[in-house]
Amino acid sequence: MLPPSLNLALATPEIFLLVMTCVVMLVDLYSPVEKREGRLFFLSIVTLALVALNVYSIATPLAAPRLAFNGMFIVDGMAMLLKLAIVIAVAVVIIYSRAYLSARKLFSGEFILLVLFATLGMMIMVSANHFISLYLGLELLALSSYAMVALNRDSAVSSEAAMKYFILGALASGLLLYGMSMIYGATGSLDVSKIASIISGSRAIDPLILFGLVFVVGGLAFKLGVAPFHMWVPDVYQGAPTAMTLFIGSAPKLAAFGFIMRILADALAGAVGDWQGMLVILSMLSMALGNIVAISQTNLKRMLAYSTISHMGFLLLGILAGTKNGYASSMFYIITYVLMTAGSFGMIMLLSRAGFEADNIEDFKGLNQRSPLYALMMLFIIFSMAGIPPFLGFWAKLAVLEGALNAGYTWLVVFAVLMSVIGAFYYLRIIRVMYFDAPTDTMPITARADMRGVLAINAFALLLLGIFPSSLMTACLNAIQASF
Image (cartoon, rainbow, N blue to C red; front, side, top):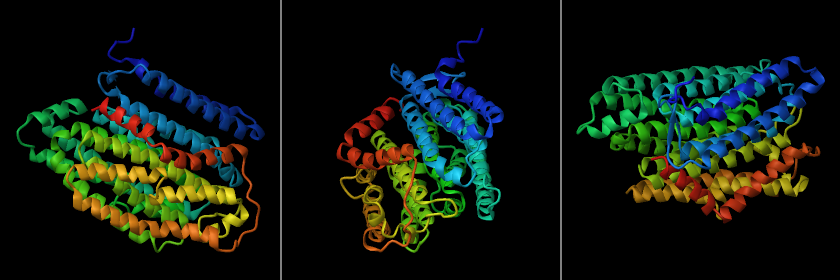
């Protein structure tokens, strides 16, 4: 009989996902070649749908945070909402990627398995209540991501991107692990709750904790891709196949947010005055570098990479506020960011075909003449990224700016608004190309019905949720208040 402290029922989504990943492995091994792709696609989507239902069934009666695996695993409001968002994001990635990868003979069992294992790692990250489980989830995600970037073995560019990603990712993991070991040396515990109580109960912060905090924040900055630890982001975004770039730029950001919250807002909440200053510097550098360097980019994927750096700077505005409202605004921002990123890379894959990558800005020339509907969808995505009302991106930026303002960072809010105005320039350049330039590509735009439908829902959701943003913001606020 299992000890009651394990409480396996709380981890049924993760257990089910692991079992189904093994089933997918067997289906890939024994299915005939002509039926393999369809079966893998169908089974992966069904698996993710059932995982989402399982997460929802656990979240519905949840009143207070509950622990499993002797306190190493926690189920609370933040974990449940992030898990739902992660599973939905991964399902969207698979739907968007199928035709793109099939045309390049990359839609394989390896891709699906790596995506599902990475999803398992992300779910563990957001529910981890112990430094060991946090690190295990992070490495499961990281190792799967490295392999995904290198999946196109015939491409020298992809191999180079994977090598850079692996080396810098290993460096970030080392920094993070070193910082965690210092915190363990100062507190004598790896449990998030115990570390929080020890730090909060002491009158003065141990210098060893501060030293470890520097390494932890540095490692988190690498994983999040904020300046000055951003050097891997543009090269990996441009070099990896677009489907892999979409994955790296979407769901893992949700897990990274959960990871940061578990460490900074939970374990190191007593040292908030120390890590706030670090986040201020990281946020300023990210917003400045991301928005200014993006102006000179002609490759759309590279431009979106610098845009990501900028967005992560805005994300930190809510976290550095150190309040529940600030944390909720950052959660609202990261969910909005994933929606926008999925739509933008989905449009790139929509216009791509075998032997042609629509990853340059000029590839979008005259899109309105080729397809007014797709141009309108891209317009919604770009306007939301630029933070133009009434789209969802405007409310996300407004929320984090309000959080920083309430925390007394008026000068930082003014700086962020200025950087946002600069960022609008390179976003609007895409609109000009789509609507005012003559098309250079006259090939008809074809796509699977499921991709067209999900992409339309994705784009129009940015408008509808922007008109009615209160439901998503309320969900984020309730999740944070139930967790901290």
